[in-house]
Length: 121
Ligand SMILES: Cc1cc2nc3c(=O)[nH]c(=O)nc-3n(C[C@H](O)[C@H](O)[C@H](O)COP(=O)(O)O)c2cc1C
Image (cartoon, rainbow, N blue to C red):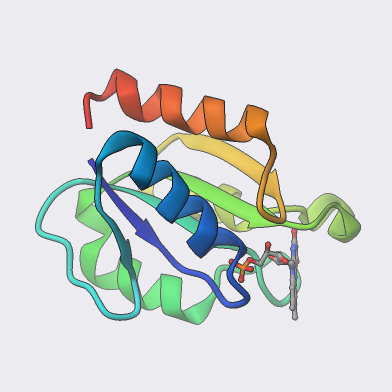
């Protein structure tokens, strides 16, 4: 499965590239790539619990190939923590694979890798 990421300050980009490296999979930037196969979306939360415009624009065009979502956020945002994942999962009826603080922990990586491996990347 393809990893499609959106990232403003680099947390999600680093995570996506690291996961892709582990799996021998491809990680692509949603702002410059049109996927032709199923993907896991990794994005972040912006505004007040919102989906970034760049992610929304990508999903408007390629939402039919979305299979799961990971959102980064910051615990600092309380009930809006990583809420982009909730919004996207509800809208596209896909599972939330993980909600992570900033760049995520080793446990977050294990969780996302397990999900991807189950789907035989
Ligand atoms: C203006 C702004 C608004 C943010 N709003 C939220 C928010 O509502 N909820 C949340 O969990 N994180 C929020 N964040 C934190 C980011 O989602 C978090 O730092 C994330 O790791 C950024 O990913 P990136 O480094 O890949 O861009 C916000 C960050 C900024 C700069």
